[in-house]
Amino acid sequence: MSGEKTILVAGTWDTKDDELSYLSEVIRGQGGQVLSMDVSVLGDPKLPTDVSKHEVAAAAGSSIQAAIDSGDENTAMQIMGAGSARLALDLWREGRIHGVIVLGGTMGTDLALDLCGALPLGVPKYVVSTVAFSPLLPPDRIPADVQMILWAGGLYGLNDICKASLSQAAGAVLGAARAVEAPTFTRPMIGMTSFGKTVLRYMVTLKPELERRGFDVAVFHATGMGGRAFESLAGDGAFAAVMDFAPQEVSNHLFGGLSAGEGRMTHAGRAGVPQMIAPGCYDLVDFVGWQGVPAPLQGRECHAHNRLLTSAMLSTEERRTVARAICEKLSGAKAPVAFFLPTEGCNEWDRSGGDLHDADGLAAFCDEIRRTVPDTVDLQELACHINDAPFTEAVLAQFDRWIATGVIQR
Image (cartoon, rainbow, N blue to C red; front, side, top):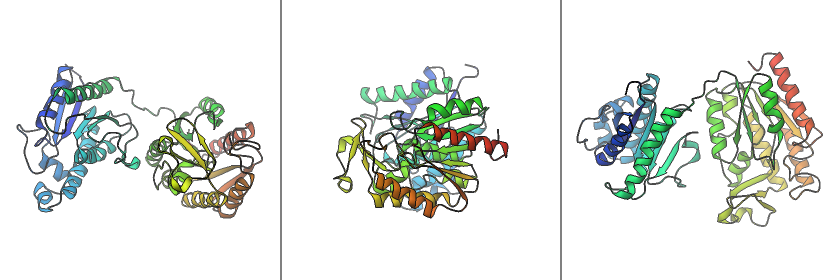
């Protein structure tokens, strides 16, 4: 079919030839095209692939013999991961592929995260893995728009159970390649962090106002993976400015919650992206609700959002620690930073009389921010709650000033 989408099918063709061939057959049977890539080390596929293992190793500045001579399977697969990532990006830039599917166990999944992570947002990425949805997968290595399916019953050889997973995956990646509306960034993008409207509400006002000014707005759910996606795009320069108003993942990382990684709140600054900062939900640590309260967080006031997610309050001294960490992260910013500090509360439960309000803890946090905020940061104290109108009014006023002075480019 002329103009049909081509899917990169990658895996260890020496040990999983049957499974990868089956994936390829399903894609072709649905009218798609396949470009095959072999990332094996020791063996060879039954038939030559479009991209050989030797080409993959060479793209990493190495060779298959060097991978073998290392005597270490981890080292060998990291060579193949690096090479496959570089080649996949080249193939996409050349217009030769429109999506990718990678199959594997722990080894193949490790490599798949490298390969998929090299491709930009909007390129369909599908991983068929024996460890899909597993805690083995670190949030900071999972691409923002990757899709995964559990490779059930498929560790060795084809059967009716694993064919169900493989055929769905093949259809999904081809369908995504046909249907995807990739980002065009025809309007400058503002990256914003938040939670649901029950706890933080500023985006309800800000999003239409920013759109009226000619900007697009992407709001990221700051529960670990959302923050990871936000940081990745900020580091790539996808945003004209960021409104990072829910840095709770910093608290999570410090105190064992749902972390977005050590680099949270650093990528925009390093990339020279103007930042607007506010401490929405800084005082809470999220943890997996159905696992019970972790030992270090027991004995505190908690709020159960649902059966998946519960938040625990931080102590006064822990809030000071968070304040110092935030200020340290902002100290290296290469573009202007405005910090909005609402002194009457930073989430809906953190109001006078609210279930999770701690006046002394809030005062201590504000005091530590004042004490440690870098001289390069414009600190704006607001005698209001983060969910009240004066907060969004102050943000929009600063935004308009930055547009007028050229800090934010349309």
